[in-house]
Amino acid sequence: MELRLHAVGFDLDYTLWDQDAFARSFFAVIAADFGRRLGWGSKQVLRAGQDALERLTSAHPRLFDHVLHQLGAWDPRLVAELVQRYHRHRPAAEPYPGAPGLLRRLRAAGFKLFLVTDGYGPTQRHKVEALGLGPCFDQMVFTGDFAERLHKPSPFPFQLACGRLGLAPDRCVYVGDNPACDFQGPKSLGMLTIGVATGPFAGMAAAPEQAPHLRVDALEELAGLLAGAERVKEAH
Image (tube, rainbow, N blue to C red; front, side, top):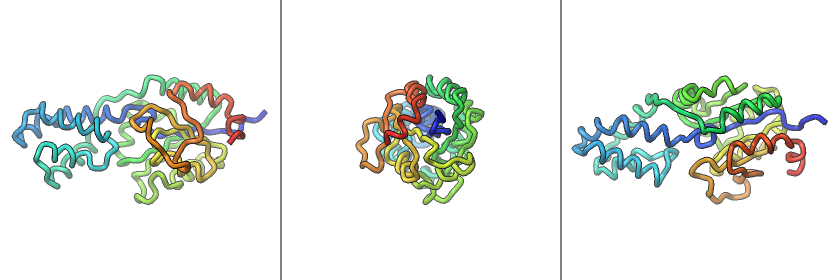
């Protein structure tokens, strides 16, 4: 019997790797410099960054504002400098332990693979390169290349990925972690969605249109789940 699903798409941050690791390494790099300039020790700057990450996660759009407020040194010029330096940050990076093996297994099973990720395009591309995941994907869509209204949860990047693959959305599944942006767009196109509890949004409550069809606790569960893709899709 023909497999109903032919492609599996993934979010990047917190789905295939720990995005907070990027931010933690960034704060470690800038701590001494900013500590000296602001009259704080590097440990205080590093602690402020770590506290902000624990409370807000690196996905928060005003992360640096919160750090500088905590240090009593908020200044829009410093925020802009931190954003620019963050975009240029080039740390070593590792995917979640199960991610590379999962992608290999899915490709060996005959699935096309695609990536749809929000964020500043050049930075997201560097992450993919640093993680060694680029060759795994048949198509990659970086929403930062487009107007903000076309970022997730818009269906646009998912339509674009499907178009590039030559597949209808109902032949594809998308795997993400954040109900606020990962599932509404693909669901509106008829795509199966799977939420994976690999990041800080695992316990987030979601409206029905934002919730994934299915949830798994770990990436390793996906290969077995998608082996029965035709049955799972038709149940929804």
